[in-house]
Length: 224
Image 1 (cartoon, rainbow, N blue to C red):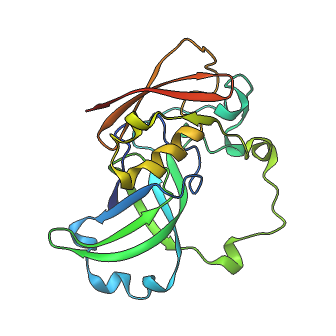
Image 2: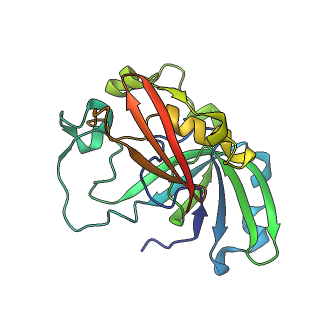
């Protein structure tokens, strides 16, 4: 039986806008808070010697009893089907995700005990975590690896027009992360309506934006 050992706190209250892979937006910050029975300091001995971690977690918003052998990857426009095991889609036989994140620091919180401060996470706020393992470069990194159809979209990004008067409403320590999220195009890949306005909830703000060709323009910023 899988046990939830922790939850991660991020700036994404919903799944809309979350980067499609971990490490794409390194400025994104997260805090891993452990359940009481897993806060023993001895469990973290030696972890500070590693720069990156693997997070094994649950797609908690899509847990279901059924599954499909094929899915529609967003980066293929949502129209082409691929085998579920050739994708990282959340709609899997087991709703389990895997992310590689940078370990920035290990801190002791007055209420939550030992917490992990990480960056580059592609997880929604309060996502349950099943396990944490150290990233080991000499085995986990493969210089000759081939990324299949995902390689054809790895450099995709948008130009961002974020008026200064609106950008200044965002806390300074969140601006780089938000900019990176917008560059990655938060829209579903099959949406190409230049007249449509989208809303992204991030770090306590709702950011309205529109996309025309390769330019994303922020229209408004409102506090949630």
